Length: 80
Image 1 (spheres, rainbow, N blue to C red):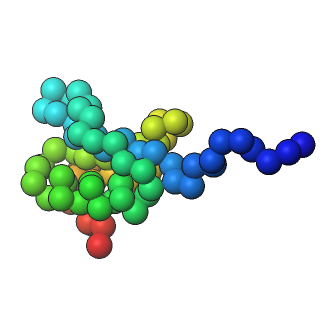
Image 2 (image 1 turned 60 degrees about the horizontal axis):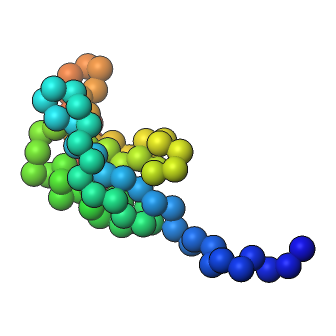
């Protein structure tokens, strides 16, 4: 087996979503790399009370959530 002819992707692609009041997720942006996803999510979550999350674009797995109410009604901690 030879070397791959296409360059291997070093970073995964992530989609940033905001969940609207009607419970519909709205894609806000797409970024490459988890650190960039975290950096894009933080200001979005700070400017809204709606749930916001990052999902892996390929697997659809949610990897970071913000502004999600906890089961006991207390706010969840923020990413710092």
